[in-house]
Amino acid sequence: MFDASNNEWKPLKQPSFRVPSMYLFLLPMHNEKIIIVGSLYKRGLYAYHVCLDSWDVVDEKFDLIDSLYCDPVVAGHTLYWVGDEIIHAYDLNEKNYFCGRIHFWALKQVLLLLRNDRCFPLLFFHLHEEMFCLIWEELEYHAGRHRSVLVVHQFFVSKRIKRGVLGLSVKPFSTEYYLPDGIVFKSYDGIVL
Image (cartoon, rainbow, N blue to C red):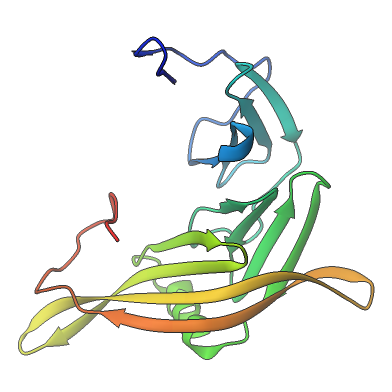
């Protein structure tokens, strides 16, 4: 961890419990100075409190159901992730899982393609309030060569109660296509927007 007041790096305090060491996701909760830590393939969800230099177990049984598409994001006190035609959510305070189906074709088409060919990585972002975004790269063959097309899906995700059950409503906002100038992306080590 970087200590800006002393301009130095310090190791994090070791937790008193075992945190998975592979396929981790780290999600900052900026307002609370907490980092949520979990694994894409192992059970458990943990919180590192930056100001207190301490660890807590959020939920040792937490499991990212159907999480093979991209890393989760955090919005407020809720984790969101993309599954097989479903947006999943987990309330960190209530320790409650809920989900909602994706009903718009442009995004379902991407997820159906990725179900069979996971070589195209998805990038998932929480933009603000109820607005989320998925970005992925589509390869086209044009004029005798391959080119990349960045596909950007923006959608709203809101909590709802239907027949007494908490769930999510997923509604499209926009789908846009960007053609980078002759670039074929080899990997997503980062992205500049």
